[in-house]
Amino acid sequence: MRKALTLFALVAVVALVAVGCSSDSTSSPVDPDPGEDLTPPASPSSLWAQATGSRVALTWRQNSESDLGGYMIYRMVDSNVWEAASASVDSRFVDTIDEEGLHIARYRVSAVDRSGNESAYSVTVEVLIDNSVPDINDAKQELMGY
Figure 1: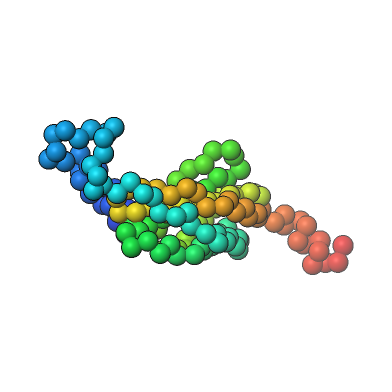
Figure 2: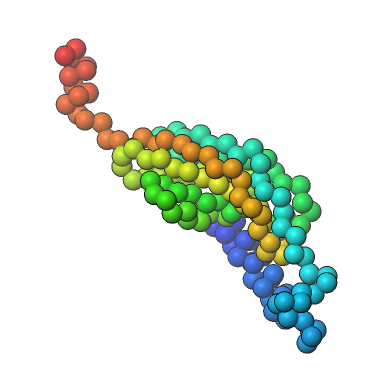
C-alpha cells in the first residue's frame, strides 16, 4: 500500500510540476495549453465489496485508458463524511475496520490519470462489519444448554 501511495504522490507531483513550469508566458489557468490533457478517465465500473470479519475486500473492473495512473478509494464508516482511504494501482483493495462494534461501511472509487485528472466516482457499495465482542456469559450458557 505504501508503494501505491508513493506512486500516486509521484504522479501528482509530476503533473503539478508539468503544469506549473510551462515556458509559454501567455498561458494562464483560464487559457490552458492546447496540448495539456484535461480529459479524466472513465469512472470505475462493477465495484464489488465483501466483508469478512473486520476486513473488507473491494474489486472493480480495470480501466482501459493508456494514461491511467491508478485509483483513489474513498470510504464512509458510520458517518456522513467521505474520506480518502487509500490509493491503488490495482483494481482491488483490502480495508480493515478495527473498531469494536457493528459498523456500516460505504465505499466508492475514482480513476486518476497520469496528468492528475480524476474521474467521477463509481457507484457506492455498502457492507456490514460485525466486530462485536461476544458476551462470555451468553457463550457459556449456550455451551451448557441453557
